[in-house]
Image 1 (cartoon, rainbow over the protein chains, first blue to last red):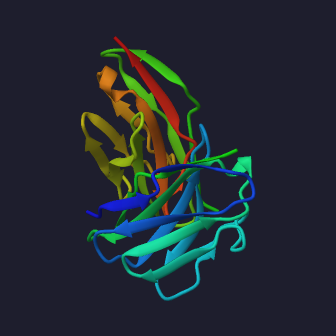
Image 2 (image 1 turned 120 degrees about the vertical axis):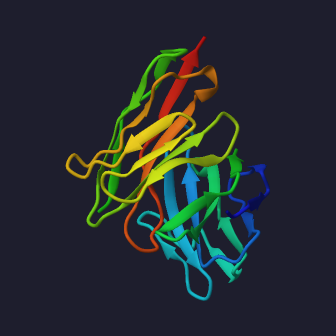
Length: 116
Length: 112
């Protein structure tokens, strides 16, 4: 399995500011993903972040708003830029680990962001 | 594209009742199918999975069978407990190293 930690666990931020969320994995993984879970909603994929390449963003998400770094195989950051109240969500880091037939995907505990 | 549709919640059941949460999917390839659970105040956990047609995933008394002919992966449990109260997400992963695609989630409340 993979143990994932995220920092901060929660934060309350002012409109117009930026927050960087850190994701640390206890093993080396190639594929890392960032999801958003808005209040009462399902998980929506923001981007895929593979080490050594630019992050790939899903429709509706752009690099200027959600810049991602992936400096090595155990760490990634997601920045939520120029925040507005609509960005209030739980942001989750996830990794895929090979398990024989297919991959298994593990999730971090999430970062609960509230924007005032 | 790939998508997952699961029954709307919330679902409220009495303890020891039978549970079914419906899930159907649309995929271009031959996906693996998953059920994840999110207990109150906790992170997302894998509950069970099935990687090919007719496979049955099971865990903690929950079961789901991969039905290719009906593109379904319904979650069932014969006798629910209060501790099963949580949000349940059906998800799929297409072949290869692609990320999970989730359904909207179904909130289950079990009352004593």
